[in-house]
Length: 99
Length: 446
Image (cartoon, rainbow over all chains, first blue to last red; front, side, top):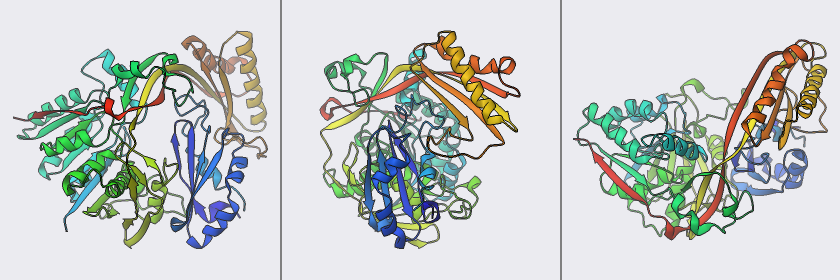
């Protein structure tokens, strides 16, 4: 199943750092995403975009994970050559991961 | 128990105006704050101020205040905004003149400034810039340097009876935290309360992003009438707990999911959100739905603020040249790929210098680059070529080479566009808090 079926997401940007949240609709699914969606997996998923490390923070009471991806926005929002300079649409691609 | 209601009037510089007017008229609010100053916006505003010393504030200030001033005056709502950008004093002059023309006697307008620290940079020549990893002295083309100030200036303006407060660079949450500290008399050393107030500011600072904006996913996350999205209201108690809601009957939705998405928006470590007023800790926050579009927020806290403040330095960085052209029908992707090859070879043959070149096939891989991904054959595709250059003439040649594909490239190319942008980037350093002092001036409408 795709993460999209059980979770939603929003991306934020600061300079060349992108953060992507992953939030389950039903708190019962939190343990599943906590086990399956590791920082390593996310780093591999975005390997052609994210040049730096990926750090994961856990918010169990909200059923949410927060992935902070370093060196992820083509040099930063102002100078990136990407069409989506903020990386806002990366959230939707995270939800494309099959678990 | 005393409660204060604060509304969010804008989530970014160019945001919709109607939701703010709806909040003032129907939201039973005491304050409305407009966050309108993205990171590099102030550098661009500084350029406008250099060209004309009476300018350099938000371009929509007049448009917004024309409607906001009479309504805010009528409903006794105080207005706080960073629309002053690089020139809060001129912005306050303009707003007080507008208020006078509208006959809003007694209205007190304050300008909060002191964030421009350009003249203090000399002290920090050896400081390492975050983005470049090199000393500040090596950064060329500096246009502006603005420090993120905390609530001090806004708080002083409120204590002196200001009705409309226009700031330059302050932290976004400060626009919301300041009135809470003022109204409840919170101790500036009570970091738990400052952390709670910072959370409220963080949830509200992006306007509609808390009330179902930037949220809809048809069939999974449905949003009522997004074209009439209501902006958020926080109803705050003296202990810093609050409910988040919106005007009854407005479009949008407030639930735990809209708020969790916003809680983590632009947040790194949720237990350490650094602001000028405290280090806020959002790691134990809870959201409880109390009624339709009414969510209770609890659990934020905070720790003592740091000794330093962040400065955003705007500098002339580079140029970006872009060109796009579309292909359709059978073989469209192959023709787009040939078009890209032609442009690359032409740039080489004509000796165009660039630091980085990017080729996207819009509809295939412009958003999500993944070399291992397999794509279905598209019915149409748009080639995009973008390059970063040191000078404007090289940047212009990028789009020109895409445009000449019309008569020189593969069959059936259409809808070519091109652009050149001068890029102002932002670099960051930390400076000592003791180097910064908020200043406030007032204009009272006679």
